[in-house]
Image (cartoon, rainbow, N blue to C red):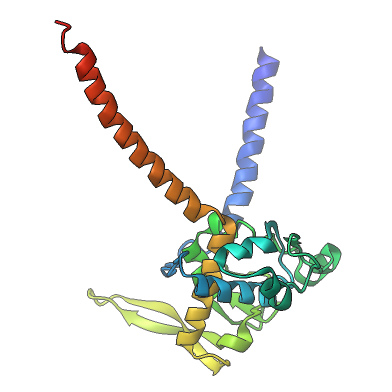
Length: 254
C-alpha cells in the first residue's frame, strides 16, 4: 500500500514538472495576450474561396501540406476539374489526390527547426480570428534567424512568405497615457516598406485565404448545417403531429 502511494505521488510530481515546462512555452508561442481581429468569414462566397484556394496553393503549399483535403473537393466552390488542373494542380498529378507538399521533411527540419504543420484543420485548431491576425501580424526582427517575428506568435520559426504582397512592417513602441494619467508603452505595427498590395487589398487577400482555410477544415460544413436545419424542422413537425395524436388517443382516458 505504501509502495503504491509512493508511485502515485511520484507520478503526480512528474506530471506537475512536465506541465510547468510546457505551459509557459505554449503561452509564449500562442500570443494569447494579443487582441484578435475579427475574420470576415463567408463560406457562401465562392469567389472569395476560389481566390483563397489560389493563395493557399501558391504560397502555403510550398511548405505546408493539407493531407486531409483533396483537390476535387474544390468543385464544391464552383471550380471544374479542368480549372483545378490548369490553375491549382502544381504539386500533384490527379484532381483526386490530397494536397501533399513536395518539400522533404528533413529539409524542412533543417531550414526551419521544425517540420511545418499540416494545415488541413488549422482553422479549427487555431480559430479563424487567430489566423487572420497572425497572417497580418508579421514584422521585421533582425534578432530572429528568419528576420521575421509575429505579434500573434512571438518568436515564430516561419518567415513571412507574403511579404511581397504586404510589404515590411516594423514594431514601434509608443507612449500611451490613460484616463488616470498612467503612462504605458504600447507597441504598434507600422508599414515601413509597401508591398505590391495596399493595406486594404492585403486585408481582403488574407480574408480570402482564411476563408478558404475555414472551408478546407470542414468542406461539408454548409451541407451539415442545412441538413441540421432540415432535421430540426422535421422534428418540430413530428412533435406537433405526435402531440395531437396523443390527445386523440387519450381523450377518453380519465
